[in-house]
Amino acid sequence: MIQQLSITLSPEELKQMMKESFKEAIQEQSQKDISKLTYSISSTAKSLKRHHDTVKKLICDGKLKTTTDGKRVLASSLETYLQHK
Image (cartoon, rainbow, N blue to C red; front, side, top):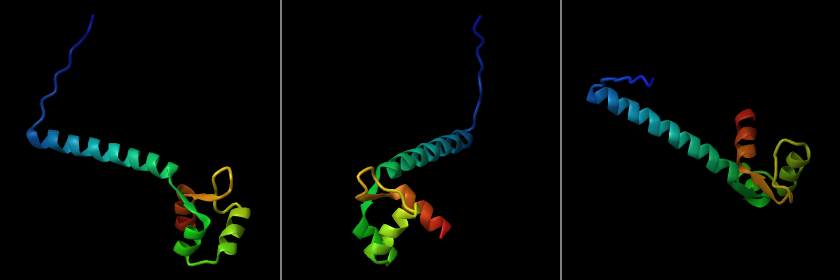
């Protein structure tokens, strides 16, 4: 036996619920997008205002993560590094 549930919402409640749903969806998409974003070591150095060799050392020390070929810094790793700096 299937039970049916009926909920009545005011237009403002429905609007608020929709806003929250869209906000959550946008946040999820942003997290997915940043997981694919990468920066060159040079651009990372420029944005951090550090020397290229300093960024390479941060990578070797495990403070920044790169793509498997070691040529690009993961944006998510850079974001984490900046939050804990």
